Structures are given as C-alpha cells and as structure tokens.
Image (cartoon, rainbow, N blue to C red; front, side):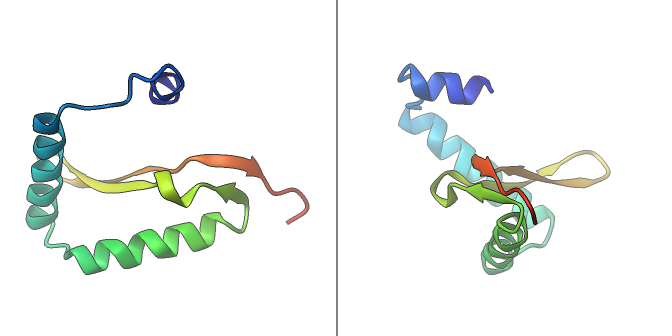
Amino acid sequence: MLEALMKIFGKNEKPSGQIAKDRLRVVLIHDRASVSPELMERLKNDIIQVISRYMDVRTKGIEISLANDEDSVALVANIPVKSMRHGT
C-alpha cells in the first residue's frame, strides 16, 4: 500500500546504490535456496498464468523473490492487480 502511494507522489526512485544492494540480496538468497534464475523466471510465469485466471494483473510491475530466514525460505510476490475477474 505504501509503495503505491510512493509511486503516486513520485517518491519511487531509489538511489543506484540501493538498487545494487537489492539485486545483490536477491542473488544471494537465490544462491542459498539453490534456485537458478531460469527456474525463478518459470515460476514467475506460472504464477502469472494462474493468478490471471482470477485477476487482471500488470505484468510490468511484478516482483517475485525468495526471502531467507534462519531456517526457511519464503516466496515473496508483489503483483499489481488492475481488477478482479468476476464469474470465473
């Protein structure tokens, strides 16, 4: 919710250092979870395909990553939804 408000008011731009840090964190998490970038891309495409049955989504803003905890890995998805599909 906060991210959407930040985009509306033009506060969405991150400094290049923060972007690099975020990318490195994603790469490290993927390495720890033994997930290749190809597998992550296939997973993202599958998730989009399933969710699109129920919602109109903006594919441009989709972010899918893995979050590493001490003893587990969580799949984290940020999927912008345009609208719900009714009658499916």
